Length: 353
Image (cartoon, rainbow, N blue to C red; front, side, top):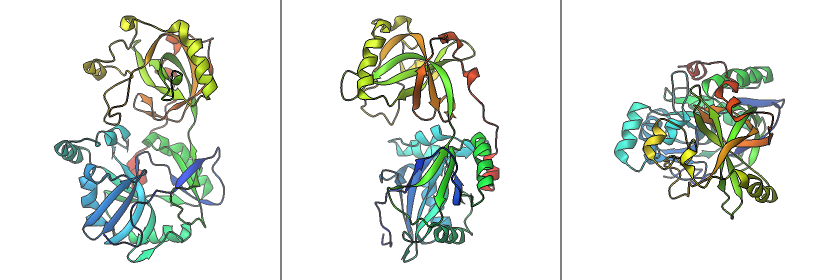
């Protein structure tokens, strides 16, 4: 491979802001795997946000890149799996599997798509120093002949339209809006763009905690919500406590610690078969590797309010943020019914399929 921009390249990132800024280019914030795609003839390499190769996990995207991308180019984009009108992030996670046969089975069953939103190089020309507007124009022209599963991300400079997208696209599983300054060159690894994400709150049961990697202090609180049948389902964690607060939490939570987990709602978390019917912490994951998934069980009596952006199925998509304790709420009142449901939106309309 011999391109004017060669791997490894760290993608340009975005910093969070509360409002959609004025005077920029706006795009949807895709909820998938961020990738840089390098193509030089039949040679194609797909690298992750951390510059690791993802090529072996997405053979159908390699084929699509050879068929639909310009012969020599470098693209910034997102790998997504979309069907039934929305994105499915958990199906992307299933691809990170050591068995090539399993990867190819999943590639045929739930093929991934490439949504391109920036062009870093074309033919023998590096475009990193070009302004955003010029790179966008070059991207649109370069991918004009491309067909699904390669897509050019919709973009606009109309702030009001971006606000409409922010409200509408969540129902298709998208994550918010990205704003890019019009004169911005491509700055690998820098948080030079802006992102506006959905923010909501929920009252959750605190049913345990994990220790921090630095020692015997709280790393994260394990959160639960009751389903329609009254079962406590694990929905995620909240973290980001100052170190002093982590030490205090160990003492504050000590009276609720359970030495015998038999009576705990997630007491059989070590039984892999139990995870098929319920969400519990410590479930098998290809991402965890040899990571210690053990946790300290607590009597599920405390309630806290957390901030979250959106759900992925029945769990928080990202780590939630602790807001405050809620002594006025009972654990039984913490149910999925409190969660705000975004209005549905057909992803096919966004991608033009």
